[in-house]
Image (cartoon, rainbow, N blue to C red; front, side, top):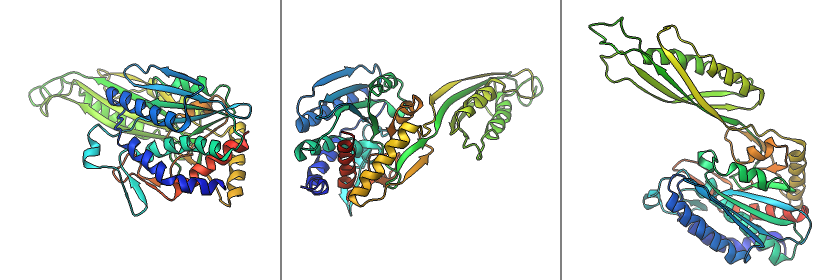
Amino acid sequence: MLITDWTRQALPAMLDDLRAVVELETHSYDKAMLVKGLREIRSRTVGHLGTPDDEILHEGGQHGDILELTYQGTAPGTVLMLSHYDTVWPTGTLSGWPFAVVDGKATGPGVFDMKTGLVQSVWALRGLRELGLPHPSVRFLLTGDEEIGSPSSREHIEAASEDALATLVFEASMDGALKTARKGVGLFNVSVTGIEAHAGLDPYAGASAIHALAEIVTTLAGAGSRERGTTVNVGLIGGGTGRNVSAGRATCGVDVRVTDPAEMGRIDDLFAGLRVSDPRVTISATGEWNRPPMTPNPASQRLFKETQEVAAGFGWLVDEVAVGGASDGNFVSALGRPVLDGMGAVGDGAHARHEHVLVEHIPERTALTIGLLSALA
């Protein structure tokens, strides 16, 4: 049987799994639901593939736990299949937005980012087995904190990818294109302390933290560089106690994205050197680089070329794309290891109410994974 014939026949069962996984609400900040969701995902994976040859549950603390399942292959080496099961959608979202398949689109919270990819990864290994195709060992790594920066899972991602022939990340594609470059992400906070005073009775005794923050926001906004691929977004602002009071405190939250790793140093210097015109005001900047940029390394470039060849064998064209969003693939790429991102769904609407996947592409994307794993054998 051809790979594509098998994946098309498996589509109804894959959609059943997808419904079940989407209906497991797994918000990044709901530990109880994350535990329940991971337990059910494990049960379904074992139901399709049997008891793994090796299994490790890494505690995530207040975040989602990390599950590592390894299945022995028929050829040397191991491929890491990386997925996250947490979503940005708060528990209860499903009641007003249930999973549905309408006009060839599957919708529901987390369906595109990235539960379809997770389902596809499991069915790819099942397909390899049922079709009797050679393949390396497969190590599934399921993480529950990707949407909040992977604070607990990063070390396990880096460890699990160390000896891998390749790391395949089942984040959604970009209109079918694979993601070979992503921006690095920095998350920063600026706190400003001024001097409170009555804005009418004693206006010059005060030193407004809000006025000072306005200067800082202008400085930060001007630090972006389209040419260098750097964006600086001040997304949160707070402060003050009343409209007739010179503000004693003000804060802002900043999202920074960089393509060039050298830009990280420039941005660090920017925050360290923030100054305003009123010397009575004090400034404190905190934060860190959550993910390094994912830049194409030679190993990843070879992996993409091999994937293109596999796709060509099916009669398909597969493009590559650079995107502004980050993923767990950034960690792997920064270590110089082969990684390919965007192996998951074709659709649109990540983190938005129009989130959906195109059902007709689910068999195709699963077949591509099957073909690539067999080619890596």
